[in-house]
Figure (cartoon, rainbow, N blue to C red):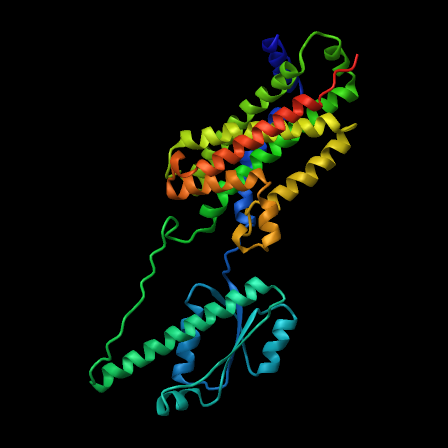
Length: 370
């Protein structure tokens, strides 16, 4: 009986010309475009420079800032008021003002000051932009002092340097961090929304009544709804692997079988949750709004965009109930660090608990009405 019910589900999917296109095209296009849009790297910060010194050292500082790769020289303003006007007109993000006696103070006293003003309407861009600019100015000061020590022939003062070593993402590429998490989001949208709309769409069409008058058990009926979307989840994940390799050159450091194992449990959990929503919903619109509410909550509490550890304590407590949190953690650890199953026992146990709870609830809440 279960075999025929599963065949019925696949025939319904094939008969709908929209669903196969969504299953194939949506993850392909979304994973190709989203990492380019959901990018928190701060580059091309528009810089307005007020050079009141017009000296050799001030020109050298401006060239060093412009060649750092983080800043785009928007304007060389004649005074600070004009630079602020550029900020008000959204033509500049950061202002660097060099005082009139910059070179004189630097040569005679060995120190001088500059003023950095940042537009923090966009707090991330303004804060990071001013921090990058302060770092470049600090490098310039160290470079000048090093040249002076060599020019005077004095003994070099013993010093040490810091050479950072970035593990797991050595080039600090933001897509490397985001793409594995976006795979989870795409699986959630497809394997969560489609099951949520399945039963309720049969209610609206009236075909659910034909099932209700048959001797099909509630368990067999729910399994026939779960298994097709469980297989679809593997198809979506495989497409995501191909897009990540093709467009971003990302290959998991760990074993693909580890990801597929966790994905099999995760898809069962999300599909079961979608069926629970479908059991309670009276219409497709109601099912969509209910699913949208829960999925958006899961996404915001999962650490997709902001680390869970940076959230307030109450939000960290709520994130415990987000299945996405655990699978995103697994995807990032396997993709970037090459973690194995032995290091992922806590997420595996949590996902198994979600799968058991939601699918049991889906079976219990489904009522056959003749």
